[in-house]
Every structure is written in structure tokens, then in C-alpha cells.
Length: 370
Ligand code: AGP
Image (cartoon, rainbow, N blue to C red):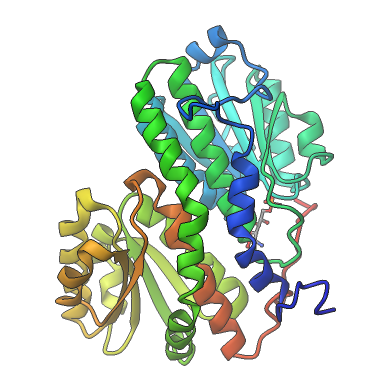
């Protein structure tokens, strides 16, 4: 059994460590030799059709939904097309406004999630082109979609999704860059800069993996708590949501993810002496604002761990209890690094509490019922 797990104690830990390979495999062959253009022949959309897209709806469940939150941020920044995120089980019941100029993107590791498949059909019934981002080539969703962008994460066994999520982020970045090229919203040098930064991500993930003991120690610290909070702004808020889901799913510790600026509208009431708050603070443009939100929780007694870049470490150490440093990348790409620290945190918290990491109670790997 350990051989199956490649020498790791659990599939989840193995899959966390497979992320550098998953990033490389998902990028491979999808950029030109000069490194300034994305190549996606699997997109069955003409340039004309891409130029005519008026809105994008990203529909998925759970972790795949959370990947879509980052996807929205990427696409809106790179292409300036309005994007909505929808939970698949809600989508068709809200009578979404879909036209033939809508691009519907369904995201699913397994390609078998019933609600996501139903969302795909809803999109198609309204004349939209449905693009699937999936990890399973022969899945129902892959078979029915109009275009399929495959993530090459390899089989994911652990119920808690890790490498599928991060491969979805890579797929969204490639897609965003491709749409940006066709619609001329990014210059070639800008695309080249982002592609170069993407190619450094696998090594940068290794740097985070090498610090897992620090995260293990912190996980043991938080494992005694009943509630905790993840906060962040922008992409950091999207990552906070994934970190919170991951932790709940396998450690059974209750947590909430909050947009940092929204705390004072209610949730701040829950902060008391010793409550752990994990603050994602990687976005330079809103860093000062996030720091002031950190001060709000600190003033109420929270114990704060900040996830940030080296250059902000000293600054943050003045307002928080602990800092976890992730390697420097472009603001658009930080999710692919910061989330790895939260995956490890969830893993070690579950381990510390003696739970079944790979098969958490009440959950199945793929949900094929509505
Ligand atoms: C992830 O950790 C969860 N187990 C779950 O949220 C999952 O992402 C969701 O059920 C969607 O699955 P899919 O990607 O296979 O469609």
C-alpha cells in the first residue's frame, strides 16, 4: 500500500508533492518555443467566436468552484470580459442569463459531478459554447462539452482535492492568456513575462514543500481549536476559501473564509482571545488594507499567521504572530503557491487529530447524485 502511495503515508501527501509535475504536465506543449504565445488547439472556438464572447460563467462544485474564483480573477484581469461564478447545484435553478455569446466554463476534476454535468447541459440548451476543464479525458463532462481543456494532474485518489485544483489554476491562466492574445488585451511581452513566471512555479512549489515542518508545527498548534478564520482580499480571498474548505473537509475543525474588509460587518464579533486567524497577504496592491484588517483582529486577541512574500515579512511581523513566506511571483499567480501552504496545513491538522486523511467522514470522491 505504501508503494501505491509512492512511499508517502497518505495519497493526499503524495498528491500535494506531485504538484510541481502536475504544473509542468499541464503547461507542456501549450506554449510556443519563443515563450510568448499560448497554443490551445483543443479550443473549438474560432477567433471570430472568441472576439464575440460577451460574458463568461464559470460553474463548478467545491474545490473546482474555488478554482473558478481564481479563474475569474485571472480572466477579468487579462481579458476584461465580465465573469460570473456559479455553484453548479444553484446554476440551473436561478434561470441564468445565457446567450450564444456566453462562454460557459465547467470545472470538474472527475468529470462526473452530477450538478456540473447538468450545468453543462443547461448552458448548451441555451446555445452557449461549453468549455470543460477536467482531469478525466473519457468522463461524461469531457464527452459532452464543446471543448475540453484537460488538466494533466494524473489520477487523484484522496477525497481532498489538491493537485487537481492547482492544475485547474494553470489551465485558467493558459486560457486567460490565450483569450487575451486573440482579443489583443495583452501585449506579447506581457504574455511572455507571465509565461516565464509560470514556468518557475514548479520549483517554487518545491521551496514550499521543503518547509512543511514549519506548517506541521503550526497545524499542531491550531488543531486544539474549535474555530478559526481565513482572511484575504482579491485572489487571497479566493485562496482563503479553498484553504477553509480543505481544513474543514479533513480536520473537521470549523473555519470560515472572509474577505478581509468584510469582517467588521459581523464576523469580527467571533474573534476572541487566542482564535487563530490565517491571513493571506500576498497582494501588494491591497497589502496596506489587509494589514489594517489584521490589526482589527489582533486588537481582539486573535493569534495571526500571515502568508506572504519575503519582501513583506518584516513589515508583517510587526502586526502578526507568525509569518509563512512563499516565493516571489506575479500577483496574478500567487494562488498557485499560497494554496500549497494551506493544503499542508489542513493535512497536518487532520493527521494531528488522528482522522482518516484520505477518506474523511461523510464524503465521497465524486458526487454523481444531485
Ligand atoms: C475537494 O476537496 C472536494 N472533495 C470536493 O469539493 C470536490 O472538489 C467537488 O465535489 C467537485 O468534484 P469534481 O471536481 O470532481 O467535480
